Amino acid sequence: MRYACITPLFLILSACEPTQFAGGTALPDGSVYKGDLQNGLFHGQGQLQWPDGNQYHGEFRSGRMSGLGVLTDTEGCIYEGGFLNGELHGKGRYACGENQWSGQFREGELQKGSVKWANGEIYSGEFLGFDPHGEGELTIEDGSQYKGTFEQGMLQHGSYTDNEGYSYNGNFKYNFYSGKGELTQPDGTIIRANFRYGEADGKGQRVRTDAEGNTVEEPGYFAEGVYFPSEAAWRAQQEIPAAQAETRLYSESDRLQSAIDALVPQRPGVRDVYTLLVGGDGTSPVFARELDWVAERLGEAFDIDGRMLRLSNGGSYSFPLATRTSIQESLDALDQLLDPQEDLLLVHLVSHGARNGDLTIAEGKMPLIDLSVADGKKWLDNLNAQYQWIVISACYSGQWIEPLSTPNRIVFTSAADDRTSFGCSDDSQRTWFSSALYGDALQQGIKDPKVWFSTANKKVTEMEKEQGIEEDAHSLPQYSIGKNFLTWWKKNKEVY
Image (cartoon, rainbow, N blue to C red):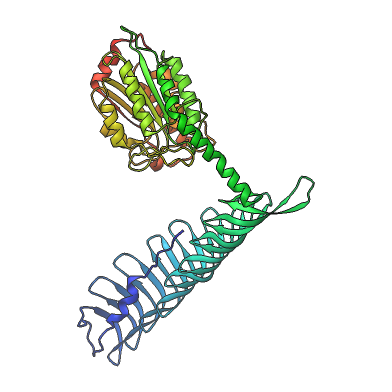
């Protein structure tokens, strides 16, 4: 959460006070006054309009805005309440857009009251410069609450509670648990430690209840919120994946070459389908699980036995890692085996996607480089394979549509270029788009690529509606079907 310093423009309007003159309505600065006068000064009820369009309706005393009134600026922001000597003072309410402040004002600033922001968050307490400052309470739209001492919009010390059963007391920084604190988890376990960016970090204590109902206090060491009996135990645990990664790196080249060597040559006169499946982000197990299922489903639709390569991160050691190098080498290997005019190259890519279309390539703590749209296009364009079918299941995968579109290629993506797609959580079996595409739609539309995509797209939309996803957040899968590809595909139907 962040709070911008909101300074309404009208707070500086008092710098343009009405020039005192007897009986006039037009001021030297271009302002116009209509209303009561007393002794040649604005006094009583009146209306003052500035040249820039800002205006005030209300009470005046001795030539200044004082009493009750309404001040409106050209942006449509409105303050209604008390004034004193041209400044906000007393009880009042200020609304700008969907943000609303109310409470006690003094010398132009809100001192104490409440604010409701457009995102549904509500704060009650003390203010400085329209930001939470001092003692107060912040309630998030999901019901979570922060209470304590705020400085310039950020909680510094206090407590946090949420509807899941978490509660925290201690210090905060940028609204994260930070410094000394105590966290109580939903199961009753208590963590006493120093916190960093919301997680227990370093030496601390865990208090839990054992199977017999006894309270057990365990001193130990925390790393990113995970408890270890000691720092030595944590370091020993860290060495295990590092050793595994080192072992795998040394054997990876042989593993990829073995997979390539196991491929079988194309059959003259038969339209063979050579397939590459890539699961990019090994930190999310859903992608490795998806490849298992997609391989099975494609095996039921096409004769791909001995003609498929799988590159998978986060799964077992059964398959080579997915890296930029292994992806390029796999494409080249398949390209050398297939007949460029007769056979199909089918590529399925699944991972997390960035707004620019990059696909995440990750395996544990190995520093791997993501797959960019530019690299993917270059590698595919350089192949001899004339007919390519590319499927990409990732957020913002629509970024690939235009760069990859050619008369000889089909491209399916799980989302538009500005939309996220769904089903990539750790507990999911596969992404929603792949589930739809390789589910019933596979058999219903494989003879006609457009029917295949449309059937899958309809299923995705149904899933999104069932889950209550608003229409403006739907993934909007995209496709591009090359005219030459479609003519070639329909020539020989014996491969379906």
